[in-house]
Image (tube, rainbow, N blue to C red; front, side):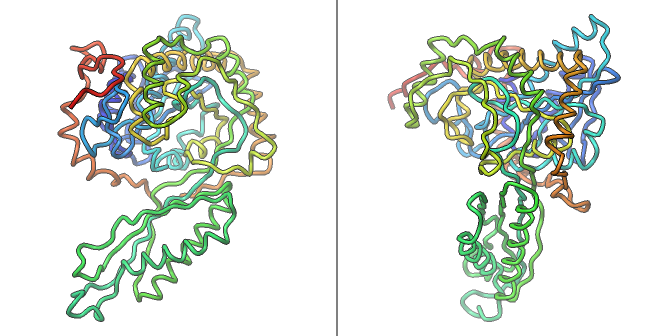
Length: 482
């Protein structure tokens, strides 16, 4: 499963092959699958069993733009230059959850246990594009606990908050009037001028924002060609902060910048929500149970080849040549200042404020990598990923079984959720009732590359591993002479 999903390499909202493959496996194993949930064609919810407790296992399935990479070689070598690839390792999490769920399902059938297992994908996580809509549309109303999984370099789950921001992802669209840029520029109203003025305004505004905020933008439409005054232009912003009120504050600031830019250029503007996320808060009793299970399982036993690939890649990118982790690091409790620390975002945060949730980090990748990069794809269809997923699946299965068989664990998780996590903070969605998932995103890119990418899809009926299909000798540490 890990190798097959790696070979598909589909961007957010376009994970059609991935979802088809995974749901067919689940259906063959007795799960009922509801497809197209929350108005997202590649989203689904698989269920098996009946009654309480209801435990939902989730992980992301989308990949990274321009991260195509041959696995198992210690340098940058795209399979298809410019194409997307699994430079975040999202090919591994749902396979891990399926493996864990099938193991627990077997025990539940054997021991006649009640309970419901759900499995679902994080669609378009790199766009923060789906989970808020899952919550809004009620897909977690009857769920007692969520076990999420995300690729890492060690084994465990943290609890509390800190190190994660929430965000709103917005595209500001400006509308002007075209004209000949040389013959009659005075007759034009440049939407691109509005974009540039908004960006200039925001960059001056940064000085007066809290240090915890993070904001970034890309111009997604800068006009057609220089001799035409642009009648349309757009800029895409991420506004990140540590809580709902501060995120809304950045959003309001952005809207004022857009309005000011429109007034200066005699253009008009509107905005499109492309994604959103709350900062995560993770459940202490569940994390403690998972970490106890991780201690029993321990890290994989890495081979000399595994360590050689890790160190060669670390050398290639200029990271510390420490190799793969060999000692289990139990996640430390949140520090007293954790709630004021900034960082990246993940829309699992929305789910964590609606259901007791933890995130299993499992050792399927190499330490010291930059993230969202070709280097992060190199290990993800190799024995490193395979061993890390098996170790993670064992821990996930043990924790899932504990939740199914220990009502006191469910009770403790809910008590923490009600009386600690949500005692003073209540969830308010950043997406509005009229907003819809941005399922149009990445369509053109996947249409551009999909036909060529299909030539590299993994055929498990002919080859034992994807490395075998590609003819990669594991590990390949030095570049061939040109």
